[in-house]
Amino acid sequence: MGLELNKVTASVDALGASAARRITDLNQRLPAAKAMLSAIRVDDELMKKIAAARAHRWAGAIPSSENINAVFPLPPHPARLNVIAADGSQIYPDRHGIALYYLINIGSIVFRHGRDEAPATNSTPQVFFEGDESDYAEEAGPINSEMVNAMRDVRELGELASLAVIETETAPTVTLLDNGLLMYISLREHNRDFGEGIITDYLRHLDTLRTCGAIPVGIVDRPRAANVVRLLNLAKMELSEITSDSLQSTGPFAGITDAMLFAFLKPGERSAMFDNAAPDNDRYEKKKHRIFFFYLNAGRPGKDSILRVEVPEWIATDRARLDVAHAAIVEQCRVSDGFPYTLMRAHELAVVTAGERREFEQMVIGSLMRQGIAPSVSQKAQGKQWTGSGKRRYPR
Amino acid sequence: MNEMNIGRLLRSATTGYVFGCSVPEPEVPHFGMFVKAPAQRGQSEVVGLIYNIAIEDDLFVRQMAATPNLSETYIQDQRANRQVPIEVSVLCVGYRNGGQYAHALPPQPPITLDWINTCADAEVRDFTQRHDYLQLILDAPDAPADELIVAALQRAVESRPPEDRERYRREAGRELAKLLSRDLPRLQRLLKRLAP
Image (cartoon, rainbow over all chains, first blue to last red; front, side):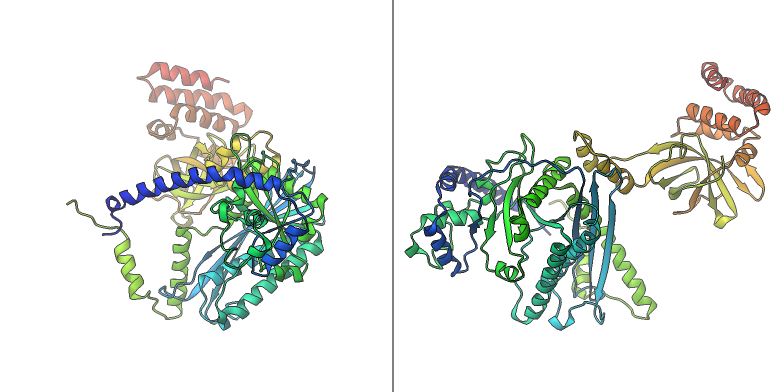
């Protein structure tokens, strides 16, 4: 029968009521968190607590040299600036499909502020399949969607790096990624080598970006992270109270996110810079790419847009280039109402629509048939096609 | 005007076709222009008149239209990279098979991605030696017939040497008088528009 909507009415009502209760509850507790942000003192005691917490793989925020409740106004935008954005899309492998393959498509745009010309746009699809010697990662075992995502993320950064090498010759160049810069991969044991290879490639691309003088930035829209909130909770704790268990929650601030905390930022303003204490960051630190972050209101009066912005340490500690990134993001968001224009365009260039996916599958079928192979999907997939193409429903 | 490629066919029917092109140049395409498309595997050419040039919007463009101080780079991105193809609608008014033009609907429409070319002056002159195609314009349900007749006849006049233009205008006027003998106000409006 499929989804009988009348049977979920009560659950949907309960969902709405729960969301309303949750918002009321968070709004009641938020002032205490904001007060804590203003009251917190970065001293030896706090740093000892942070050190103790990090021993338990604490993923909080480590204060930088900037006051943690500091607010930085919008810096001027350079007259001439390049903004490069890349985004990826994919067709995941389907073991029930006509053949085992997957596809990654990377879209990119080079936007040259101050030169009144159309930006350069590009879209690069790549197909991977069994027996392909290029990059199928066969040794890592059956490919799964998480591995495809990781490969896509690396290719996005690789695209930015290769374009930045050219564009940094002409003007300061900001590169934008529609994601945090700190890449998380949680692969199973047998995929560890694959994960190592991915991170190695990713760090190599960051090396290229640093060498060519680019300003790499990762943007997270509607962030749900709570690194700074974890710091606030940690500051409330006694050193002796810090254990793996006590660090599991954010105590009185449970449910509050950093974005809620920094909702006081006015359009154009950014928060202080923080170091991400997540254990994954240690790997980046070894290559001198430790990832820092701040929050930025990229909205306009009447419509806030709190973004989380991640940068490598060599940008976080370079105020002049940080200001360029800050100004570039706000300018980009001004045009597209709260999210960078170039990232929207990169997504548009990368996205593989359902129709394109069907057409691609037809191409694969044609190729198999030309080789004398009769392509067929699994019976399970066939069943889905039969039953999912258009449900018959009779009134009762 | 010389013949030139101005777009590729998107969809077609016996009565008309739509082709796509990138950002319009100042001179092409424009309303009332004679264009041609190959048909029947190149055996014939379908002659048509451009009667609509449509530039679609989307939510992205609408958002940007409300943004103050939009720099030229954003505008060029939307125009050159995104808003393509611009859709150009053409009314079929005849076809050429061998050396002869027929003022009638073509036996077969052009097919997807065929090149669309402008008609050179000599082709416009040849095609408009007779005026039977005017009836097809008057009968078109979707095209703005009167405006299209005026634009097409002006193009036909321009394709002729100056010494021949007045004679051509008079002949075209007489043909319109026959076609619109029962609608004198409309005829009068058209003749007024055709006057040099």
